[in-house]
Image (cartoon, rainbow, N blue to C red; front, side):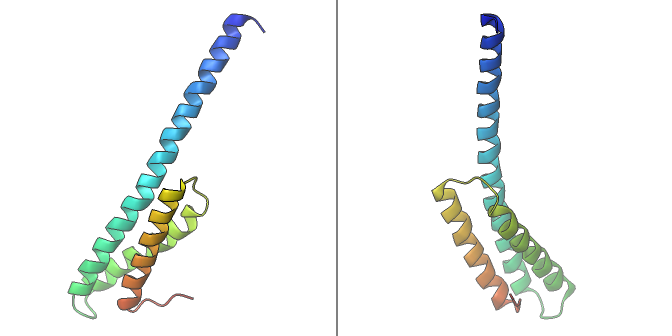
Length: 105
């Protein structure tokens, strides 16, 4: 392979690695942000009336976030610190959902 083409290929590989790193970092940020939003929804739900539409809607949205992040996080490439942060937030969210009456199998 000519030197010029080899250099272009190496540059392309380097750019791809940088992009992948940014995507992985963004993915971790997304999971953590989603869990934070879900915790906010559980607080809103807990302040609403027992059978109110507001409580039901917010609790259901928080549960969906819990289920999705639980499923996705196992496949995400996370650092040890990011994984611990996500796992801690999942435990916190699950506890808040159980307080609202959610049942986990």
